[in-house]
Image (tube, rainbow, N blue to C red; front, side):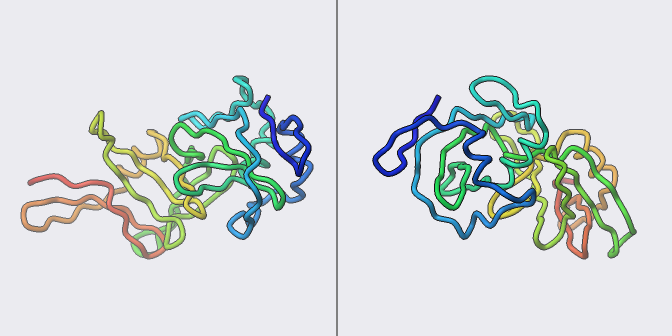
Length: 194
């Protein structure tokens, strides 16, 4: 179990102690909080979106939702933050996974609503941009959607295939780009020659 410093006293840090500092179920204003760093917590968010504490999956969805509401990214590191403490955690890829997609409207009025593994829903647009990077090792697409404050969700393979089916194509100078629309914004999914 990790140790934290609270003034002069050193004590154990566990998920339950962090929960006591949180009173709301929606995302907390962590971007406004700058508490002291208290150490590392043995917590990991796996690439599939599963949260682990001390090597064991956290099975209570409400606990995962609570922790995700106080997640913060600073200088490439991830932390759970309350107004009085900040603890480091490990994230294998993205802290969230977009697991389902709901499409409404058409053309410029089309909206793409994603449901994350934490049950949070976001609609792609100016605040929730879709980007597709290429995995440097496999060369496969690595699709993301911005959730909040520098935190991204990995778009699951099934959801990405749904986006590809919705994609429109645009050709310019021998290069064809594929893109999707949501909230009057276009997001490029990829491009190819010819």
